[in-house]
Image 1 (cartoon, rainbow, N blue to C red):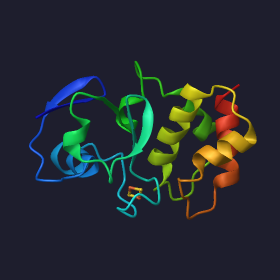
Image 2 (image 1 turned 30 degrees about the vertical axis):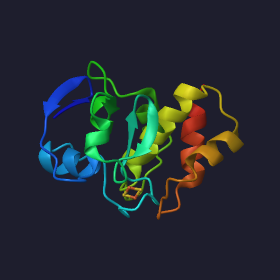
Image 3 (image 1 turned 30 degrees about the horizontal axis):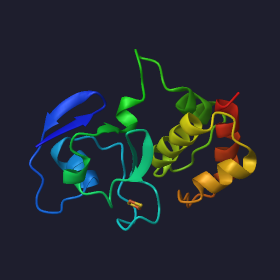
Length: 148
Ligand code: FES
């Protein structure tokens, strides 16, 4: 089976019902997407499928065939970080950073759909991404920064 990830084709052999997250991490060594809860509740595993943020732990790899998958590894272009990544660094968002990849992917998806989100839009959109260090105020600030 082929998967299109970050504009590159990969041939993979998922086990029955294997999640996209598992294939990314264990078959392709794309380890930027993290395993947090494994049940769709934390957002650490968020990737984009056709531009929409999805929980890769809850997405069967097979169902992603023929779709355009973007992981955190695919955001950098020509050696330059994505504006959302730059904003997260500028605001010095992270502490332990385990949630970082999922947060950034959700923020990218939000800004692609809504380039000028209100604070409420940001909070609503990011509520499925959990940060146990409690950096949410800085995450909101970074998304506002990226939307300027
Ligand atoms: Fe997928 Fe928590 S690991 S939502």
